Image (cartoon, rainbow, N blue to C red; front, side, top):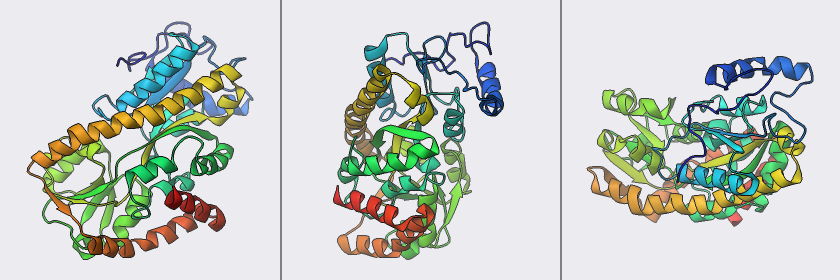
Length: 362
């Protein structure tokens, strides 16, 4: 499948900020100007029908084509939009060409992009309700999480009711397979084995999980992981298999403890104000594309996991540690405080407990 446009930029003019083809520099200038524009009552890039002045709908992600499990779903989303709205509608920027992981949601709130694909672990500190789907050992894993995050599910409805007033709307979720613990020097078979180890985590929920087991969470980008593991800067990481395979990390970690140490999703978000300004045809097309992404994109992701990623890791020198029920119970008990921490982070006990119930009941 071919992306709608390349990550080098969209060949469109966005007056009044550019009189010629738009490039990354002018987009970043627009991002910098956005707060002043908002203060003046002018939404950047807005037009009468909610699309951009030239009729474009901008989609951005930092995810690269190297993630052969995740990227096809994003392409399907774009193709669905194009089929509904026209082949020249979607301006697509991948691989962080427009906004990197830290910039994506703030940039979307400022109108730099209309739709952004973001990993939940990157933003659950700002939007704690998302953590309901990231907690360790709270359900039976991937399939249950997939049901919990399905379009129009009770959890998704509750999440959106919470997210919309904060400026973003989830229009499609792709749950990733469960996160394992990967270590360099010794396997983790019981909670105490992680004590004192420096473990890379991608989000706050994972960080609390690592701390509950006596480890020290370390934040760094996935691009830095190979060198950090090779040099001993970190002792391991929490990750789903896609990161291991896409970054070639099976060569530098020696042990993998397979259990539900956490989970996250890669979600399609829209700027709430922008979404509300679009016409019914655009809104329906976005909902349709989000459903395609959630269903067919997740199907592809899991197929790649089953047929490519898992066999590749199993065939590597990596030793996979399979835990029995008693061992899993010991990790569940040791990490139970993470749930209490998350409920406090949400700041609304009733809301948090309802979200957690929807995850467990899915």
